[in-house]
Length: 134
Image (tube, rainbow, N blue to C red; front, side, top):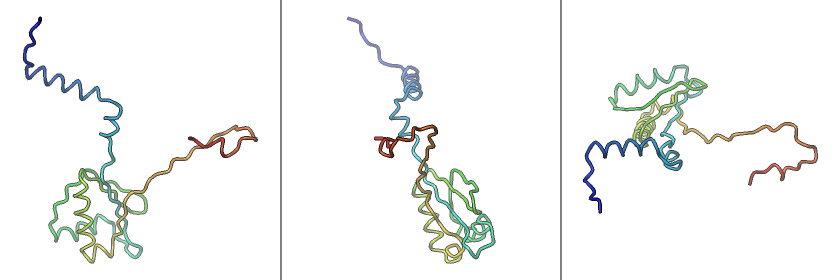
């Protein structure tokens, strides 16, 4: 009977690399979770940009906010993406506790998107029940 030799560190690292690139479909889906995101919009009576408001007010608090990504969105808004939900909650608490920020900035969480589909050239006798996906 053949005797098995213990695995070397090189062999173990190669196995880990193989497993990383050959993940199952379910494992890949779970790894692509949405990152926590907070949408910031200026209030109705405010003319300033959100970046200006945040830098003026948060400079005084000296709060450490480590975000992953910031991008501009419609209606003079900002979308801020974090790695962890606790960091999002930290900024949210900071804004809600500061009266000036609370007055000038409105907070929102991103909503769910509903995809739509247009189908052309259907027969006239097709009913709505026939079109439903089970």
